[in-house]
Image (tube, rainbow, N blue to C red):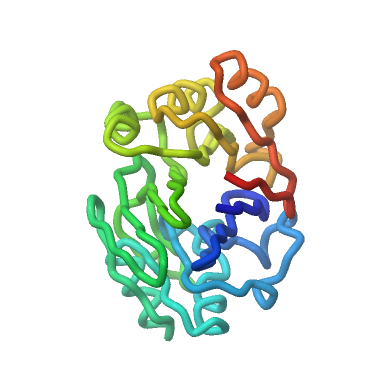
Amino acid sequence: MKITYYGHSALLVESSDAAVIMDPFLSGNPKSGISPEEIKVDAVLLTHGHSDHLGDAIEISKNNNCPIFAVFELAEYCRIKGAQVKHMNIGGSHTYSGITVKYTPAIHSSSFQDGDTWIYTGQAAGILLTMGGKTLYHAGDTALFGDLRLIGERNAIDISALPIGDMLTMGPDDALLAARWLRAEKVIPLHYNTFPAIAQDGADFCDRLQQEGIVGFPLLPGESIEV
């Protein structure tokens, strides 16, 4: 499994069988360093409907003739906008084109502004993505909550991607505890430094992970790791 970070919470995940992009906030993201037109994938995976996660999902789906995986209400919004979709919901899993996707609980809100209207886009979620024999857990924008421990106990997670920005998600202290509970040996920090309100020191967070015996990867946009 190769994971490439494109700023904020966007991850391109590739194996010999498939490629997916998660939460592709690219064109409006000052940190992404890539345009939606450059993305070539077999599926788009969304944790929730906020604009900094839905991002360019619909355009990427149409460009690649591929489905968007999302919680039911968000999937319906994307379908109405002309995208192919896979309707998911919390606790459900689906195998498609060399990947298995399972949606997990998260504590966060989920909505999208369409003109002057705010549209409810279902429950926010985390995603367990299995491909190439490895499992990535993308936590979305969750707060710390006790069932993260259960997610770690029930799944053999190879690498977790956790928000650390604080203010709108959990911050570094809570993310450190989440990393312990999830039992992954590797962690990528997400959702920080895109805007001043979520400024954090990713390298310092990863140093703190190392003290817990966990390897952290404070990736810059465009950087990749192999798991």
